[in-house]
Length: 77
Image (cartoon, rainbow, N blue to C red; front, side, top):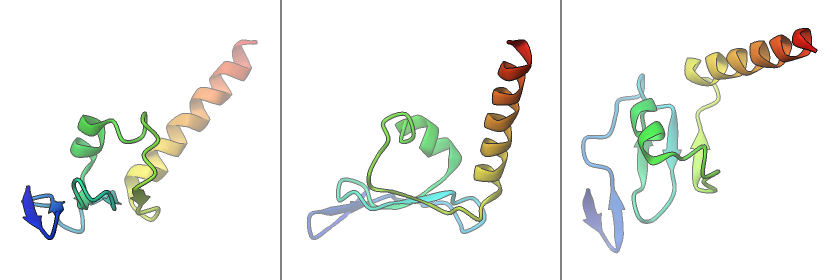
């Protein structure tokens, strides 16, 4: 991570096509890839600094999987 004015930025940030979110946390600002998102467990922690790029395919795929799980659960009961 690179430090600038007490703000650290991710070094080697992913490109636009691989960025699924942006982290506004001063501890590590920058674009986030799916790999980093999972590694840092941002979603599980419900990180308030996370800004999702809603138009990225990752979020649509994630929502589709959630919907299928709900549907499967409803069918089982």
